[in-house]
Structures are given as structure tokens and as C-alpha cells.
Amino acid sequence: MEKTKIYVLRTGEVRVSPYLPFGGDDCSIIKASGITTPKSKWIWLPVFSFLIEHPKGLILFDTGWHRDMSPDGVFDKKAQIKSLGSWFLYQINQGRIVKGEAIDEQLASLGIRPVDIDYVLISHLDCDHANGLSQVKDARHILVSKAEMDGTTRKSFLIRIRFQKRWWEGVDLKTFEWNGTEGPVGKSYDVLGDGSLVMVNIPGHSEGLCALKIKNDEGKYVLLFADGGYATKSWRDMITSGITLDKKLQRQSLQWIREQSMSPDCLASLATHDTDVQPHVIEL
Ligand SMILES: [Zn+2]
Image 1 (tube, helix red, strand yellow):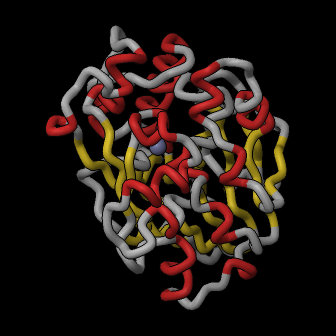
Image 2 (cartoon, rainbow, N blue to C red; image 1 turned 45 degrees about the vertical axis):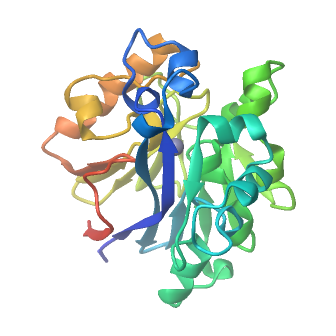
């Protein structure tokens, strides 16, 4: 069978307090937010999106930052607050995206138009994953889990800051229900119906957060675990992130990521924000 190619694309960077990605089990949401940490101690992390050239079509996993976060390709506070739609959210995470890194710009350089994309799959609806959605709004199917969308409507101050509907306004973003039982909580969605592309619910960081498992005919796979952990060291050393909705579930999900990543069938296991990862192409 034809091979699947996975392009690891850097779609900007995000600046956060070091406790947000690696705060551990006892980290409070206040500490994770960075309010109590001087900006000089904050860290820049990459924001990866993944283009998958699958024998059955073109698939994009997450979209990274929108160009309007950095209209001139440099750090722009005013533009960020406008793009994020929240001054509070800007206080918790900031972003920048140099020229040529926005997802539509990278697709164009590969000779791909958004209308050529069969599926845009969104791991979860945090800003650094969904803010760039409108740049690929002409894709054929744009999907997020129903659990994730439902989670954005909870009546809590934090949820209202965290998820801004403006990022998917005017985008035909549809939801999917679980149709499988893979993963740490037995909830998954087989995108193509042949088991080769499965969105696996790894809740904790957010309710409907999904990893994407891409499998070939021989049972080998690549795992893209989004924000289920922030780096390889997250699952290797079992370091949960500081930002979470449910710490117990987050740990359960990280344990699953660890088991999956250590399997001899796993060819690669990648987080969205690992500083040790560089843009590259994986063949499966
Ligand atoms: Zn993220």
C-alpha cells in the first residue's frame, strides 16, 4: 500500500510560564497562568501543526496561530489581544508567527490550497490550536469532538476566557461523536472508517482533547498527542502540565500516552509544543 507522509510544520511559537507545560500534579491554576512568575522566566515553545498525506486524502491536524497574531511577522501585543479576543488570555499566553509559518502560507509553499484538504482535525479548541482555523476554512471537512465543543459552553469565568468562539466564527466547524473504544477512557473516533486515522480522547487538559493515531497496514503507528503532554519528557518522567480541567484524568491520559509511545509498534510520538522537535517529514 502507498505510504503515508506526515509533515511536521511549525506554525508559530507560544510564550508561557514554565509551570503551564511542566507544573506537575500539585501546580495550581494561578501558578500555571504565570501571573505570579516574572515574564523574564517565561519560555517560548513551538506550536506544531501536522499535514498528513494519506493514500485516502490530505488531512491537517491543528492549525497553529493565525497570521493576524503577527501581521508583520514580529511580536505585536496589540494585534495579539485583538486576535485572541481577550486581554486576560494574552496575560496567560502570548504568541508570534514569523512570515511564511502561518498554515495557509506553508500549504501554499507545498503547492496545496485549503480547498484541497479533505479533513481538518482539531485536537482541542485552545487558541494556539484553533486560532488559525479561518485560514483553512475552505477545507472539505473541519472536525472537532462534540465533547470539546460542549466543554467550551460551560458557565465558568476560566472557560469563557480560554475558549473564544471568534476563532471559528464563519468556519463550518462540525462535531463528531465517539464511534470507537480506543484510548485511556475508551472513547475514540475512526475518521476514515478503516482504522488508519483515529482521534483518541485523552481528557484532562480539556474535556474533548484528542490525540491522533495514524496507523499503517502492518500495525505500526505515529502518535500525535497534542497537549496530553508538552514534550517527550512529559510521558517519560510522568510530568503533568499545570493547566488542566481534571488532574486525575490528565494523569490517566499521560499514562496511556506513555504506554503507546513505548510500544515497539510506535514509530514516532510527538507533542505539539516540544522544543526538542524540529520541522521534519515522517514516512509511515
Ligand atoms: Zn497548546
